[in-house]
Image 1 (cartoon, rainbow over the protein chains, first blue to last red):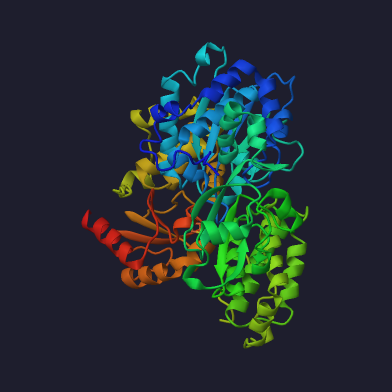
Image 2: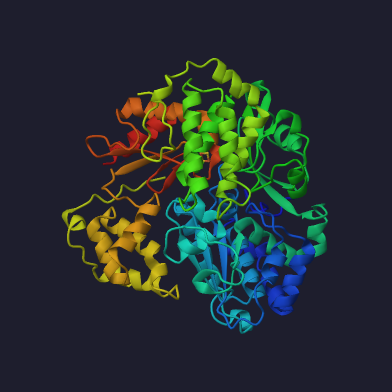
Length: 437
Length: 174
Ligand code: FES
């Protein structure tokens, strides 16, 4: 496939507006301004573009939920919080082609009639926040942003807003709370952000990669975009491959390639000639897949059919040297650290899982542990929490226990049981006590 | 890449914090971007961290007063996020990614190397105040694992040897 989103990668001076304009940049923005908001929404609906941040919700539909009769203001927010373990695509887009994102933001803002847009970028991305600010400055100087853009009567300001270190702020309502200057506590929905979003106003939150697709849809048309991939799973997608492969990195491929093609052809196979053991198809929040499932198609619907998810497209590859108990332990600690703490099943459950897995990893597992893990996970997923972080730890952990149960059991059988009374009986939320000491 | 050292905390940061003209101008520039004053909180805390080195109790009260919030509210926000320093940091904060891709691609070895070389564990500083070791979650650069962020900069595809060169260079620059 010819590169679309990554076409500027490797081009000298790709970040400057001159290079971008020379490659036909901002033509989509001009076309959008001529078409009017409704036609822009229609074009994006027809392209069947689905959100690239994780949920895969149709972008055009998200835009159309903004109430038409609202007096405003409305806001567009670009989600550049990129924190899902295994995901590093937004950074790649910004590094090589920031104007693509700015143009996408401009078109999306126009489509929902927002005159202010914010880019919420994770606090660690200082370099990429600066790149975006420079790009905004360049676009403004050319009259592509600001008041009365290109004589259209449309005003648009874009501001970069840095987060400060919190995975949860990638969840759109937590992001909104954080943008308002508060702790990143996800909100109960409804109302959805399209109706009551940032500062209480209608808001659309779109991922960087989603917005980067929009200028291409405007210049090359919805039919062109929909011709890539397969029905309902259209367009190019960035796959971030990390872990045990020969050539990790960001690959732009049509939706619907198989994970085998991604891992074997594009990434040169598993490192050191070892065998594939397992992989996470869409960041560590997606249920794990075994080597037998490598022929599943990498798109939204095929992953859902295989009871996992494409998520953000972060493929984490694990070879046969890894110990699944250690992997589960590592993941559990991530979510235990990142749970915002509002909902009991998530706050306590993730910590509890981490404690149990620590214990197993230290060789003190108990026969009941796998089922205990599954039970904790069941009570933390499928609607038991305000936001999907409950699912985000529960689904991968339970999938690991289910698919690699023999390995968990072997670990327990080999273990030296601790005297019963020395084990903590309650979930422990304080500093790690150190088991058995 | 030239990683800038962090500001070394001075007396004013721990007690009575006043914002000078430059700071006030920068705060005003932030405020005009948002319809509410509260929304400026995170950006203003960033400005303060850059200026004073860390978010001391004195900074918290000054920010609270400037933005019309209670100190308790500001402190609540500060403590929610991991990147605001609530105690004076070392000049170079080594933020080692401990998440999955890094941990299976050499991250553990880096940590072992660092702890042995610097003689400190997670959360600790070297006695001369040069380095501080912090374990962090996925930095969004997993394809180039293992990754360490030092102050604002990313160092990727590291090996113990490459890391030694980086640390020696930073130390030499003090
Ligand atoms: S796992 Fe280390 S940067 Fe993502």
